[in-house]
Image (cartoon, rainbow, N blue to C red; front, side, top):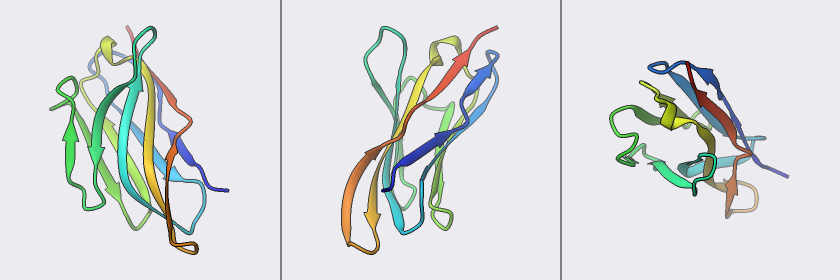
Length: 121
């Protein structure tokens, strides 16, 4: 059984940076379209970034210019570089990805488990 594994969250001071990672838990799966979301306490889920297989990206206005999604298809890994972090960025961050099963030739959607990002002095 495959799932998405997220890492890289933590506590950072305002103005600092963190990089989140999202990858399939085992080989045999190709990570296709990936969307990053976040959910702050008491707030609804927010779409913040999107990256295609060919690394075309889109960003929410709230993170544009500060966050950058990227990917290494050889490593089957997607990243979210978060710079100039603000307290308002505090949230649980989730990746959502379509995974292509090489053996089964099927495409399914998966959610990462979420990783906490806290921006505080």
